[in-house]
Image (cartoon, rainbow, N blue to C red):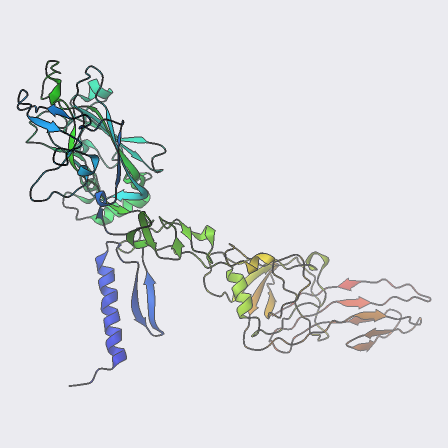
Length: 547
């Protein structure tokens, strides 16, 4: 039997892991490792935590104070046996108490525990109760909310939600045995909705009519029925739902919340009107509240854990925050955006970009650059800085950067002089969290960075090409000095070269080229004036560079 190398086995394992990741398609993995010719590489995906039973992490508050039964102790009846009032609620006795935390506990050994209010002994004053559920975290519903009532479901109730941790509220759904009478709304069911109005707030009579307290206990806010509008009855077309989540405005927000609130407005009446002679049978009792949801992490986390008193996303993609709503330190703040479900099945991670990409490029090429080929004398409009534009979306070190220069007249190159380009960076480049690197107008500190200015014959756009193959050479500055000449000849002296001109008007031309590159550039020439007898016109011509 042949021997399989360790590297080959590793490559096969990585391939299969990569394949499994791609076939899952439920956005529960943020990254996977796969093999390439250059070695193992991470590939990133949009991801979200798995659904959880959010009642395990909820904080429950009941209002108004004193609405919970047992203080003082009192007896109560049931709707099935209105005159058999043998049950008692006593807050001082653990076996007879019905505190709010019993709405979220786990039932043990078949024993039903529940929270219960006082009876409607103050009728006709309304029996009102608010149950506020707080998570201090953005969540997304993944299945139906279910509230289990003992002794009958209320005949009037409103489910509210908050997106800002309880500061403001908005109705989620209305419940009544007669929607028009209670809220002035026509009765509807979720099955009556379509893809265009799936986020409509409706009033339903489906969970409020009396059918017996033992037969129907559960009140629902239907999430799955809304999902099936897009996916079909068996949830087979999840891609359609995820596509609508991205394209339909407000759909994802409709299933998002930080807090929920049950407003109990009128208890179960047993299918009749209020019987004033026996008000001890009217009250609210809730044994369980189920809220299946996942942490909202903006598709930047595959895990959500409870720490420091609240749920926290374990952020990926260079993001941070409770909901992964900002970039980590050292990454561009403005590059943050939520992940996307598209393209299915793995989506787009939309990772944060590293801050100061251009600055890091300059540092990387500082010791491995080549001298530039540029004119020895720049026009006045360019004497301070050369604006450099770089795309903010670049994550790799760019090799080409476009520089826009003003148009210049072209003359043939004549003399070779080396010049040092001045490239300066603003103080923002030192800040690793800054969004961009802006060149400074103070060009006093030269940086030995090599690039080549290559003109375009049809435009005034130049291309700066980074070259990291050789070390930048020292440059020298050529200064043309003009001396007094006779009427027939004149002599021009330069620090780097001396030329003798022919007759009355002599022109010394200085140009710059670089021997390290394949591109030659022509420099400007200065015409010496006749200072003794004949006044010659002085002109300066600047030549464009050609590749």
